[in-house]
Image (tube, rainbow, N blue to C red; front, side, top):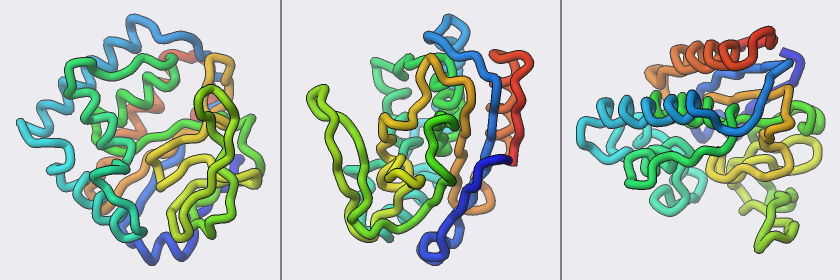
Length: 225
């Protein structure tokens, strides 16, 4: 791994069961969603439905553990759902999962199929290392509202991912900022797979995502750590 990624002691104290897998990929080829990535998303929704067996996503033990972690830092998990629960709800709804671009489709499919939060960031847009911390409330989170650039600030104590320039994702993995997101021009990326507890299934999910990345981008350098 060439990027420095750290989890603060404060976060580990609040959620001692937190685990993560990092995939760093260079030389990727991205582009618009394809029939193949759309098929992966549809298959992920079927895998999710089979896993849940009629239950709601938040009734899955892994999602329950994430809800407890969100509650611990002051978020309301029924209002600000972790990314996996939010995607799962969309996957089971009539509209299904959104098609964004090829790389985002891949990690969204893995997130839904395994019911774990997965995020992707453009390595070339990350400033310095990435840190998971409890916010002071003074950090900048650059986003957009009504098509205009705007700067928000996290709540004090909120868990956020950040780099040297500011927050890249609010409320752990609830809302990613546009500054570092993967676009069709992205060629180097870091993917974060996050879990709560030893049975989250991160290793299997990481292996599946790495295999998919190598399939859509032959010749890419993909490292799992």
